[in-house]
Image (cartoon, rainbow, N blue to C red; front, side):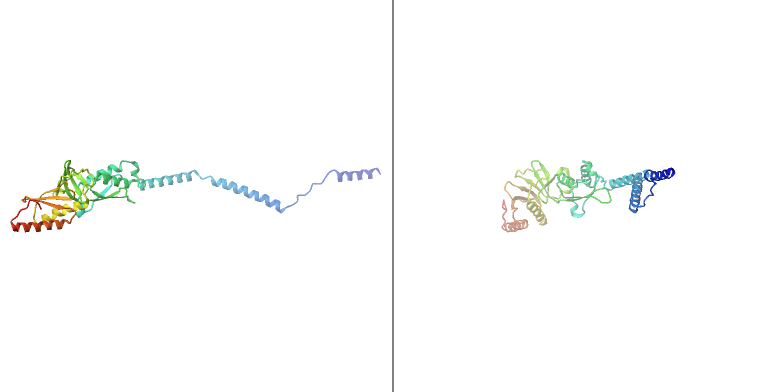
Length: 289
């Protein structure tokens, strides 16, 4: 009895007290989550390691960038010493030497460091300043080259029409009626065959200023040409105080020919020649035509 009761107590003790270790339960979802976390950690580690660019690669990238900047800087570099191009033929009648324009353009390009670059060069301002310095230039065109480094300046002059003598000096007047230069500044061989007109109307003349109208300038040159073609030598051409009038004196003739510059110059010369022939046939010599 005694032994039987102890066995039963031991059995009860074992049943209620100590527990047998349980076996792990396999779960598909829990294992998948663990494997996903492991994969993410591995990918993050590889990404972090991959983002660490080797120093030699970084150095080569800097080298490539430096070479690129140097090449771009050289490509956009502009030489401040331009090439000046002048036309040939009748349009090549420049009042000044080519080196004069070259030196002036070089100085203007050197006025600012921005003119050393093809992008920042103030080509329009330089062209405008050249025309201001040299009123005889009708056209100033600046071309920035793509491959080379020296800018190209193309010049086109206005044609000198006559020499105007005023109280303050003598000026070359171009075909538009503008005073382009004082005669002492230019080569006199370029203007020796131009008609010289004396002003008596107190004109105010300065370089670059419009003095005559283009039609008046053409009238004077055409009258001079027509008289020369008829073997008549002009002694003097004068602009009196009266507007639009030109007084002409011929060598060996005692009279003055008054011409209206509002009319056609050929008709004016033709009218004079007809009146001259008629009066000479009568043996008359007028004092004024």
